[in-house]
Length: 498
Image 1 (cartoon, helix red, strand yellow):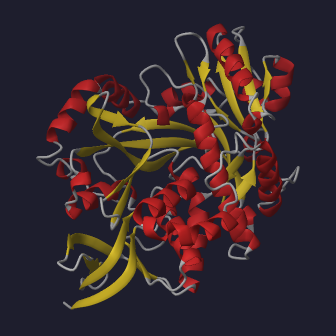
Image 2: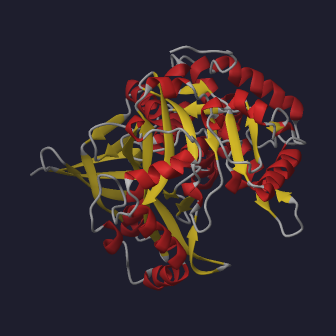
Image 3: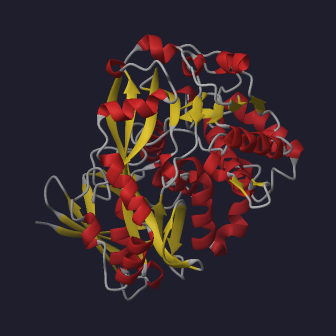
């Protein structure tokens, strides 16, 4: 067994969309840096970034009702939706820069135009949706949004959902045509192909077993070659842990104080996939409903047109599930082994607080296919069981931490943990995740390389014109960016046939 030692400027752990984005940004900013990537699977984008393991929504907060909250006075708080929309615009600009620079050839291999819709039923929900629409559409980010509670108009928008609907309950939807479907698995693989062409050393089937700080301030990683069993010790000035659900264990191994008192709770998902081409052809949108009472935000039901392997698909879900694994390819002991003396009280506090979530997950796991079909029929009244198959989606590890609102708070979102000196960063959490990868990785760069930001900022702004600027307050810049990204990413075409 060899025990060779190597060095790099930057080490990226995990070949998902986050590492791909950070690696690509750094290669544009400092092409001379030596970057190494370690991924335990055989290819890039195989876990959380994979197209079958995430919703591919291109989260711009156009249709997700959980990003807009009705306040006690009846008004709608849209601040989170605005924030996520602006963050997604950064991703769109960076991807457009990559296409313009010929670093990506065909944008339709990873992004397609697709209307985003919200759909609700019941008088109270319709009233909320109308208020949400009125509040959002006053802003330049959402000015093209439409609202309708007219069943004839809804039949035009979503015929598959409206056919055979017998309920007299009020129904309404909002629609915005500038939504997208993003294949993050395909995008991840494209970015890693590009990085490989720029001499980035990408090691698949290599697992990071441990890491420690050396006396000279570098990070030393113990890396196992899963094919040969050989051990390599690799040192770097900066390490990014982007291993999806596996990031928590590696963060704990780093020993940095910022990684203490943090736990993780895994939630898996199941989608129903349509196998009937006639049914698939009748729907063309991502339609998000309202989460059931007690359901976690990532379990908002949605009926999605998707473009996977260059063909149109139709998915419904997600149904929540539970597995103690932190990755689809992880271990049944992942959850237990993540409990440490410094986070056990945090985990216990979360367990006591989240009994309703536990009950919900147990109920979801116990659902039969026919019970899942009944939920699908709330969207598609005429859905036939034989037209739909079940697919297990990716694992999501939600962060548990102590916050101002109490010990052991379950967080729904994406979070970056960095050491005080900026030498190591870890990405934890889930949605909106991949959609806001560019924003999240720019934050990593800002936090970890503050001394270089003055030199790098002109290049960042050349790639991402709205960096550091509020698009909400700059409608003319927003218009320019919309025109540019639509053109570069091929999103201004009315019909794209596959």
